[in-house]
Length: 80
Image (cartoon, rainbow, N blue to C red):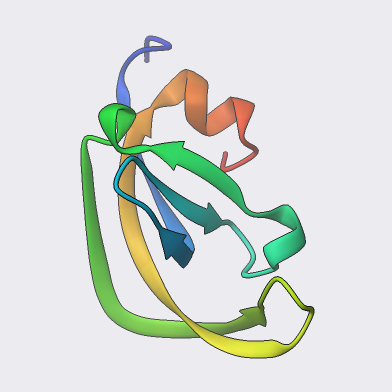
């Protein structure tokens, strides 16, 4: 697999803006990262959820999503 090959990862979805989505691998807001929409090949909510934390440390239920990003980005952000 080349570093630019698309890789699908399951992420907890925290927040979004016009240009990026805030996601994490474990639902914890302190470990969430912004991923630019321009590097996301696809983003689909799974209909499932997980327990995580919001920016204030409060427990919240977060939707799960399948997100496709380049392999290098998935490795860099700790998704794989």
